[in-house]
Length: 258
Image 1: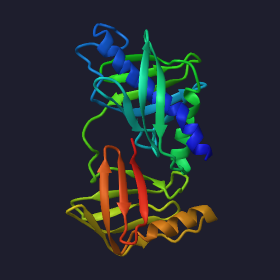
Image 2 (image 1 turned 90 degrees about the vertical axis):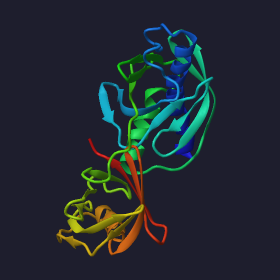
Image 3 (image 1 turned 180 degrees about the horizontal axis):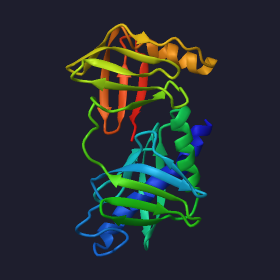
């Protein structure tokens, strides 16, 4: 319930940008709200980072927003999706009628969400767009930076950091197309296995791992991740996020590391 309540301020931040899109429609020549050469609507704006009290937090989940032609905003702040309306007030924006889902986050995704939530807890952020990048700046100086979305991250060759189950940001996997393998870390131990990708499915072989012993929380996450092996998984890549789903419905979420 706390996560559901706290998600509203961040959605306001996202809506703020969308309001910026509205600003672009209202004043195509505005240097801050947008220009004819740099439209804001219909574009997926991906959250790159949030800076609060001088500390910059890099994105650890696939947070984004889309400004809708004719008004409105929708998107995701990593775990929950949102939608709402925006009101332009000069080069600043205000969010109205926000609605969101209430899925709980854990691990690095939760920490990043909280940084976003704390960035805009009130007021009307200033909107600036330049060279394919969008920035929201609160009256207190906190900033959220976005970049224009592109194609989905390739499955192969990407270091996929495991977001859930929580392994304190230590677990990651990389798929190698030429070798036909998947390798990385389960949070405590290194792992390597055969991996065949075909028609939206990944068949993963028996894992080879090191045999270190770590704290209980890491071993618990590692035990859950080991269940991805010796089975066939459904997978889906959505921009910088990847979801792996086993036959019994167990789901693992990962994010493309920079």
